Image (cartoon, rainbow, N blue to C red; front, side, top):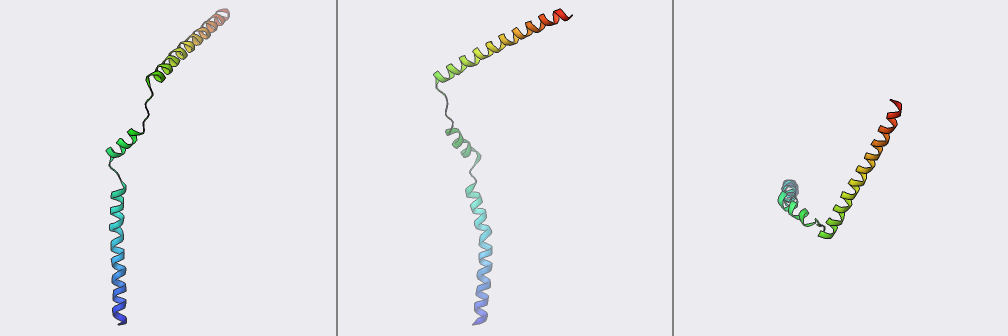
Length: 87
């Protein structure tokens, strides 16, 4: 009777060890979604701005660019004028 119980315990341990990798492989396959499903999920999270917001931001960028261009032009003129006295 002792030998049968020992054999059963060994057999049970072997079966448990054999089942673990199979479960781990199945779990990995189930956890890893496909690329396109993940892409679709992330795409749904995007919040697009409305037309009014885009218009306001576009005007702000254009005005900022013009202002910065004028500042650079003025600095360039001042530097040229200052260098004119030296040379």
